[in-house]
Amino acid sequence: MTLNDTLPNQTVVVLRHHATGVIRQRLMDLGIMPQARVTMVRSAPLGDPIEIKIDNTHVSLRRAEAAGIEVTSITQSEAL
Image (cartoon, rainbow, N blue to C red; front, top):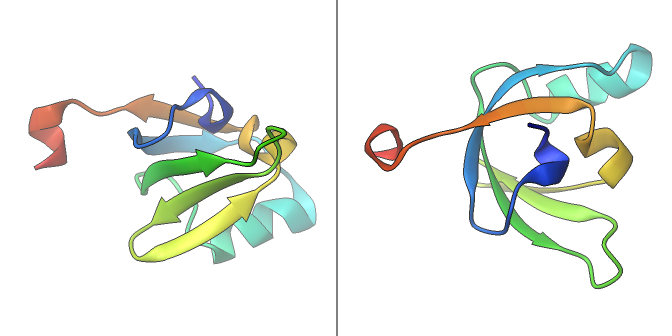
């Protein structure tokens, strides 16, 4: 599953991302790294970009970038 597949208000954990070069560094600088918890906030009206929340920071990503971020959903008990 990728970050692109998540639904609004769904919290996921980042497993890895397949970006390279400058994009990979940008994602790491924004806090999108393995084991980070990310919540999908919303998608723009035309579908691109998406808004995600990492800790208390809101970030907008293109769908193409989100498609390269592999995530796994967390269960309700893990969220607490």
